Length: 119
Image (cartoon, rainbow, N blue to C red):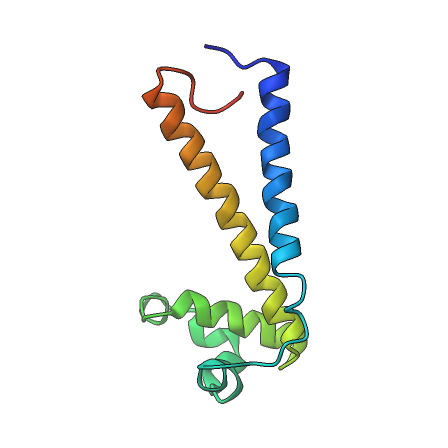
């Protein structure tokens, strides 16, 4: 089964809906101060002060190493300004929404005997 231009437009519209929903839902978080374990994981964590702390395989295999690496990049770009940390978090959530949609679309397409994703 091939996808028509109408189906491709619907797929794109669904992605736009996910984008706008994510922006609306998380639109008020950019100036909210750090909470919960943010003090320990970000504010009081000397390891995130340098991304060089994550440049070995051993360092990247530690629990939460990728999260700490993104914190390090955020710290390098904006210090402890919460805006950057929240912006990266919102982008990650929206991208995950896209991935969940595409995966669901693919699985449901295969279960129904149709083509998985538009080409």
